[in-house]
Amino acid sequence: MSRTDLSVVILAAGAGKRMRSARPKVLQPLAGHPLLAHVLDCTRRLHPAAVHVVYGHGGEEVRARFAEDAGLNWVLQSQQLGTGHAVLQAMPQIPDSHVVLVLCGDVPLLRPETLAPLLAAAADGVAVLTVELADATGYGRIVRDAAGAVHQIVEERDANDAVRALNEVNTGVIAAPAGKLHAWLASLRNDNAQGEYYLTDVISMAVADGTPVTGVRASDPAEVAGINTRLQLVEAETALRRRRALALIERGAILADPARIDIRGEVEVGADVFIDSNVLLAGRIRLGDGVQIGPNVVLRDAQIGAGTVVHAHSLLEDCRVGADCELGPYARLRPGSELAARVKIGNFVEIKNTRMAEASKANHLSYIGDADIGRDVNIGAGTITCNYDGANKHRTVIDEGAFIGSGVELVAPVHVGAGATIGAGSTISKEAPAGKLTLSRVRQKTLPDWRRPVKKPKPGQDT
Ligand code: UD1
Ligand code: MG
Image (tube, rainbow, N blue to C red; front, side):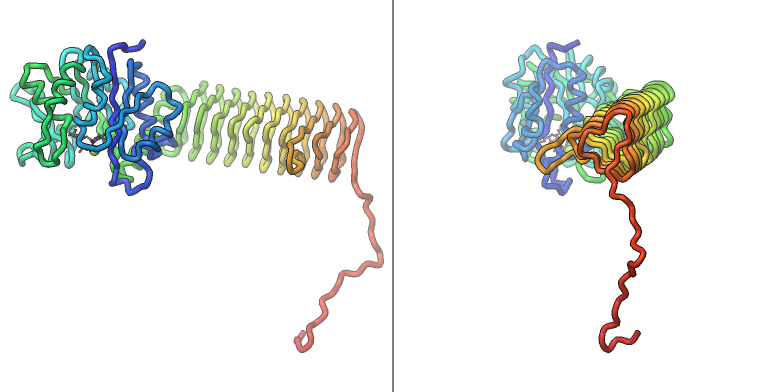
């Protein structure tokens, strides 16, 4: 359901000096995606009418990174004169009838559920998301009146000792009716300790003109934490890892250790999925019922059918695996691998752009690229498809029931017929007919008079 009266303004113009990085802060990666991407994900789930991103420092790099995101309106703040000034830059494009939600590009763990009460309260007044912190250093403090209503936000550098002692702080997330906000922002002054136009000053303006102000307390400090330093970035990574791991457990997966799984994409799991420790899941992952993922496995954009077991140290990318397969340990499936049910891919086997039909096997030490393999094919250890001639890739076709002996080179394009057997150690570059044994092996011989060469001692060298 879209909220046709909601405009979101995301503040992303700050330099992020404390990161000590050449990269703009909102492009720093969290779970494999830029901080700003996380904020945009949250924003999208609110279904707003418009999303304005205020950019400045390193702005072109930020814009370029999100160039494919057609729904964003980029607003340049060429000088960083404060958070109030930043929001003001977007106001000319926001109708007075809208509610404006201000988010920060460096607060990546915020969830839409937390924003719902804030948006509800912003229908007829200002709402600010607050949080209580054991150590509030650096934050704007929330000053409430005797009745407990939010009265003012005071930035730390403008605060006296009594205000500094407060530990309820402004998260930086504020929602307000656009018409009023526009007027308040236009009359902000910068006569404060930092010489900036503070967004937070709209609170006292609202109080002064009788507009209700609601403080909505967030329960989890980690969710509303801003990222300013490398350490905070790492802490956010830990918090997000845990959040995603717990969500997976809630959906029925069994994790060996929720602290040792990294989820950098969207994961769908069936019933009774087991994931061992140190597993990395990226992109779109679908794991069917009963799938077992061994330790140190990396899956990226992979779909795995029910009952399949992926043993330790395997790497699967951009591939589809059927039901009841067995992969690894040390299996590598590269993009375009499609395995049907009951396929076995063993250790040190690399598969690329290859279809394998039911119950076929490549159990040891092989490279199978650009191949179409029928059902019940057995590929022996050390088989290589020679698919690349230096300029072009060629296909290898192996029909059902074929048996490829160990150490075979299949020089593509080449066809092995159904039920054919290829003798071990062969180099096959021509059609291998169905049902026949084909081999291309130099006949073995023994030279009875041959002697192994012996090193002659160098002159002057003792033996
Ligand atoms: C701000 C709040 C403070 C709050 C804290 C929460 C104000 C005046 N203070 O303080 O009450 O506790 O966030 O983290 O709002 N930005 C711009 N343009 C600017 C200035 C800032 O886009 O001219 C962006 C920054 O990139 C950042 C956000 O606004 O994403 C907050 O700015 P920052 O300078 O970090 O404000 P704080 O001093 O931390
Ligand atoms: Mg800040």
